[in-house]
Amino acid sequence: MIRKFLHQVFSRKTPASSSTSTLTVIPFKRHGIRRHQITPCALKIATQIQQAGFSAYIVGGAVRDLLLGLTPKDFDIATNATPEEVHHIFRRSRIIGRRFRLVHVMCGAETVEVSTFRGSSTEEDDPVAIQLTDQHGRLLHDNVFGSQEEDAARRDFTVNALFYDPAKEEILDYMKGYEDIKAKRLRIIGDPIQRYREDPVRMLRAVRLASKLGLQIESETAKPIGDLAPLLHNVPPSRLFDEMLKLLLSGYALPCVVELRARGLHHGLLPMLDVILEQPLGERFITIALKNTDERIRQNKPVSPGFLFAILLWHEVLSRWNSLQAGGEKPAPALFKAIDTILSIQRNKLAIPRRFDAVIQEIWTMQPRFEARAGRKPLRMLTHPRFRAAFDFMMLRCESGELNAELGEWWKTFLSADGDQREKMLSSQPGPKRNKRRRSRKKASPSNDPGSDTMIPDTQP
Image (cartoon, rainbow, N blue to C red; front, side, top):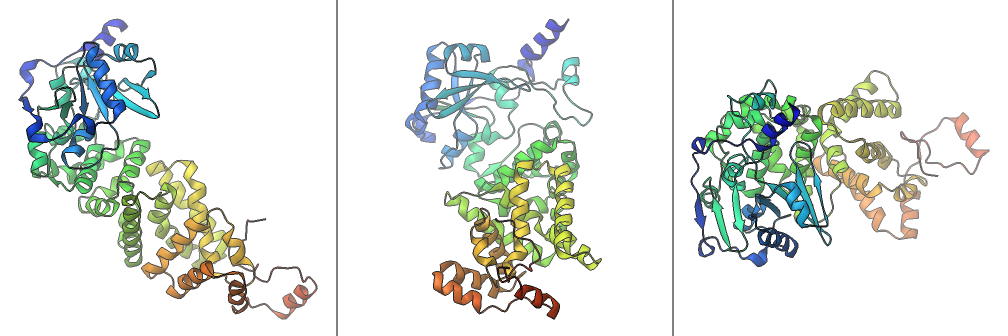
């Protein structure tokens, strides 16, 4: 019984009569992609699979990006060989995945993902297919092998359903994806409502791809997004986090966030984002920060995910912090309590991995310490491992108008100054006010740091 079930899941195919796609073969003279534009590893792997008697094509985003004149991030391969057959061809390979088995083939420092053509798993008259979806229509399992045509039909967007044969330098197009790329159009394959129900993350992917690639989302593809946005609540938080990270690191985070808000998708992605963007300072802060982040990514400069999430959540922390202080709590405990509350809420919503918590918390807790410019505190701040990230964060606050611009200019001058100039700058700053009793105690202990009376205790030794 179990063997029969597994055979149905892994071997069932959709009848050819149900397909409405038409194959178009696009020669090199039309598309202009040469095989040498494929990385040597991916080309070698595709060639070896073909020499073993199977078909092998470069697929997905790599073909799309090459047609758009972009440099692909990686090259994936699709084949009619099973994972076991691919694994047998390549000694340095491993089969991975539970929802759908893939093969990772290692070639030098590069790893190429090889997938077997996938088939449909949503036939209404198949009891196995019914078990593969939840009550909202979301696919829970997709372990179905199929033909190349079926593989094209089950991909998300037409621009991702192109197959490039490096041997013949031809593109096989079943879904008119080549036409859509030329028309700068993003169109989902199949019925948009059904496809979004199968995987609600496709709505977020549509926004990200359209913003990143400069494509216009086709009207029928865009129409159901607003109504189906609540389906994102059914997606595992870890998947939402992965998709959010791709969006923020796309180099087009700002237009993506604007588009998310316009289409009502932020409620399912970052539930607090709407509140943040309704605050004038918050909206300006996030706009400037994301614009700067996009510029860094386009210049191939590193960007910390922790820094990005610190930006997005800061004004919620600030609002909670101010409320706690207004209720009578002291600044330092109030800040830590606000941080714990906001991160706890977002962890349940977005599954931010705990490995980012330290970065986020240190950036936030260092902010009040930038305002303490007397004594030795500024010098010790420079030795903090998160100083640069916290400094950049503080400068964004100054640029957005949240902090006085004079504070940012002082720190910029302090960083570029030599030792003597720094000493003069520190001595010119007024020290913290103390009552007479406290001053008398300080005189008895000349080694005490005059700058120790800050909101956030210094954690450095």
